[in-house]
Length: 225
Length: 223
Image (cartoon, rainbow over all chains, first blue to last red; front, side, top):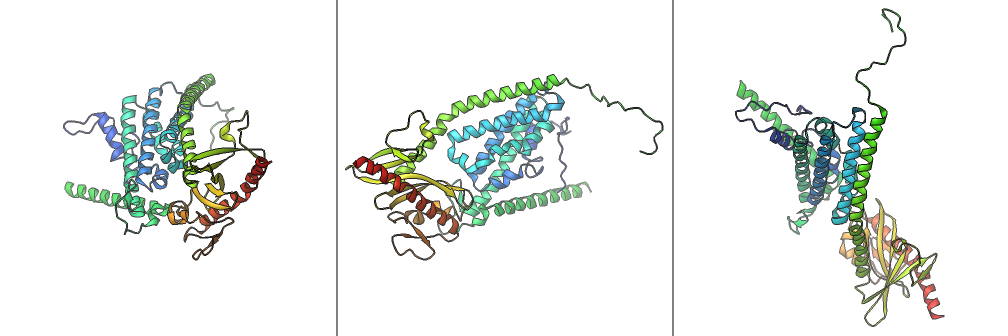
């Protein structure tokens, strides 16, 4: 899987007849073609650690989406006022502020989820997706494009978390979102909700993605020939 | 370096881009920090009541659970090493160690609930322990917080047979791997040996620590 990891999508839209609007391209890039987890391989730590149940994966996804959108917007809005020398410092300050807000809001109104996610909410500060998008995208373009990109990347991250966590919860606890699916006679495969299950699941998904990319590349080649 | 064409004087630092005055960098960060501080302080103020309400509700739920929904609850406060029925003055009540005494509708004491915590297999295990100080008989325990291994150690919270087995046992408890035979033995869980032992140990220590305090208070009441 040697997918190029473009920091910035091309500024000029593709040459297809009605070129989709730039904002849509920015948005869509994070969900598919530049998915933060499956393609850019960023944010793998939370993708492994809190994907043992769909509830946790969803909550982590929402919290990250919130932080990503807020910080991308703010960074993009003030990008011309931040001197290059202190830009990383300022980005981290902005990101950490929104993470703290998300952490307190979760603790106040969703205490069970907050307890289940433990230290992984504060750790969003060091999630590479967020600083990566700030540095590679939000710090260089206007707020509208930055927000479109952040929503796309955030949803892409959430999608990845949901895929991994649904697989792990179904096999590891026999349930989805806490509702028992596989019935009382299913002996939960506890291994799947423990850390090795996360690695195994993510590995299987990467394998599948790699196989599909390979196949697509081969087909494209055959089509051209 | 070899191949230098001519001797040079001290090379000037290359001025690639005009440097930004330090005062501006400071201003940027100071402004950012101030904004961040204000936002966080505001959200903290807004969320604190809900966070504390949840913590209180959790303690109350655990007390009711281990004492079997008593008709009346009395709170005892630990001041120094003595229990008192009146809260100490000038101290944040949240910070004071408390014991909760439950009474049934006839006014008879059903038991006392106390918080206790000790390190388990992964992290601290926090329990609400309910017992009768006169007989050391347990009325049960309720998990307040644990991070034991999912699927193995966390059975000490999720396995209801294990949790229920403590009701009616007499401290000090012993753990056994086979079936419990007498009133002081509890069967430990397969795959959660250390976590089960931790629970047993926390309960033993809690009873040993609180029983003298409660008896001292009772004696005082008689005199």
